[in-house]
Length: 568
Image (cartoon, rainbow, N blue to C red; front, top):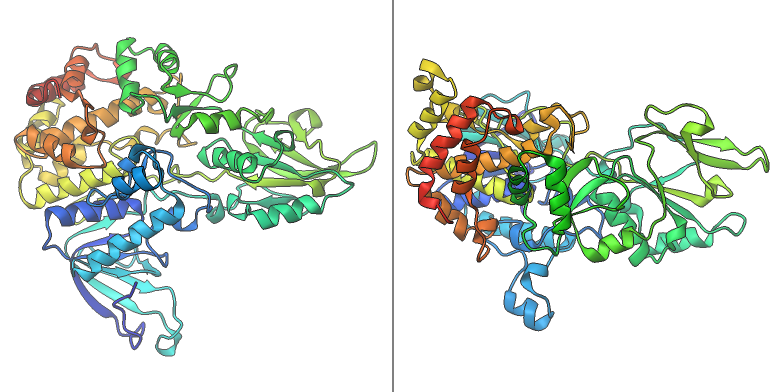
């Protein structure tokens, strides 16, 4: 993909650019936003800046065997099918469209083709391998520079200054941190073989299996409990054919997973169950597990985390084959210890809050430290330590953060639609002010502009986990910010706000969602039941899922506004 930069430019002579929107980041979030806002406003000009050489965000650096958790049907871009032609899938590949889960290669090709189309149309300019200067930019004049200086005059970076007419869009705050880009955050002995999932490929595995010490086969120790660790275990067993007894899995916290095959297994089902059982999360989870919507790795171990992973029955079966599972918390160090009997050096794991003696550690059962391969799957993923939880920062800046539970694409598409409605003055801002008045906004509400109203009303899922150092939804704690029920409530509230504020007529936003391939509402027969949910919440008592009396009044107003969506 060609860059509009000129090789004759130098750092002392900035290239001057103009655009309506400057988007930082070319990952799935940024591209979903870009796609929707250009669909709604084709005359806009957008500049896209990214540090990576190709579009795709974390998918660019991810392991080759990675796939989407969820169906391709609800991921990617609103204007372009990720799963491709349904006819070809069904009649050439024998696959139902909703069973397709895109691979890394398919995702990168998909994003690149889309961006090439937008560049060819003149709607977008793309500057890969460039760094945006957050510190050296002002609200109107922004700066970024090229990272690749080869071929440039005097081998200097090309510097760009951008006059942005409308807004800066920060699309990198929710960046998914993956193992290949994030070293482990604990000390590791130099004799330990520590790799990432990217390093697992057939040739290397065969070499390792052939170079054992003392005739013993290699042991693969998977560190982590997220979807990356799950993928790695499944890959080792199903593709690399590593025997289950040669795999050890270090699981800091068991997690609830969503079943891929079960009907009704949408994120919204969580809030419905919690309301059904009067806010009792334990009963709601038990109900969802009985229905097959939620699953766990081990029936005898109650998970304490919820990360929205989607798992298939075939994957779960393979994962349950692993019997050597260590549950002692997070790893704090990997060192070596010499066995007293045979004087052989062995790998030893220390755990957070553990002790320094052998009773608080795990020592590998392998004969030698050389026979262990540790696989780092402990990167934070989307829980990347970002402390910014605001979407609508100001008139000149907007952050792309989650409105709803994953998949991320629909959140970003909805943000694109809201921003489009804002610049077209289609938002029902007066209703937003009405909501703020009942929440205690006072006289200042009348002085708020559209961005202030949106910024005050919408919460992000990042905000619900801000108090959780691990960045995960904790279950059964007393801290409401760590409550996964609160996450479900916020996601549902944001949907209600979107439908109520996108237009004076809530059917406008609803019909847009019906036509948006990224939305569950677009699935035939799916009911969003947002009017019914707001009505139920408006009838709850103060304290239910942490809601206040003012919020209950807001739910009542939203139910009234959304009454045209009754039964939908």
